[in-house]
Image 1 (spheres, rainbow, N blue to C red):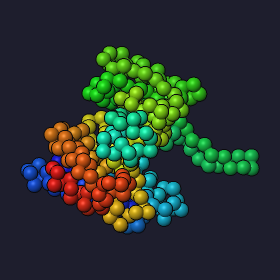
Image 2 (image 1 turned 135 degrees about the vertical axis):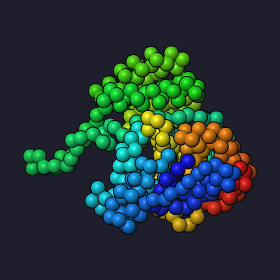
Image 3 (image 1 turned 45 degrees about the horizontal axis):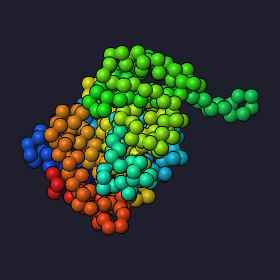
Length: 353
């Protein structure tokens, strides 16, 4: 079980330290875990001049799984685009060919009040958003800002091939089979040809999964339905750009993006696991960050890459127990609960394992 650990920037090292405590716990129980650490993002730019050094990429490609903290910070926003921390993230996803991003949005009963929506709308929420991660307008060529007729013009290319859509469709249908057997595909086929193809291929693939009910929704409506009646969804599948937006929106349903893990998988189940949140430079170094999304990402890693369902269930149960005990980091704190820091939360999870 070779795991490449990339703490990254901002709160990354703090939350990663807690995830490592969980891995150390299982290692002490006899799980053959090997950990190697590498640089990615702003810290890599500072040390090497590039956001993804070759040594880190080699480490990631040779590992069985990659655990990532977070990248980025305002001090890097003025760098040339190729040097910015986020480019390191895009590159490692592309090189690892992790095309399927799975982001669960689960509302723990104890956190129903932390959601910005009424408890009755979100109580019992359990949905999974599957986002295609290596195609679409984020990677399409040509792309540029150039001069035309005396003024600047910017353009990008939204592009998907049939095979790219087909492979994410299979991941989505298989995920739905293990859950509530309902899949909603999100597109904008009324104005975008790329997503008309997306819908056509989804319908074709659905013939292979007669036990899964496939529905379709336009992205603007999907964004609205997520805040109006989110419990109507079981599994959602969509392209890279729409998925980027919808998965962040869904995360707020749960009260804190600090609660949401994510898994990005390749065709054979090797994955990059990371919290859904960013590097939060405003609270970095203060011991305030919520490590639960990172710890829950370890649970997803146990489940999807190592097939250690029992370990995954134990981690998730430990997180639920800690929340039931009333311990909260600032992002999910409410009156009547006990405020704790990053380290305290990590220690409580270890104690609950």
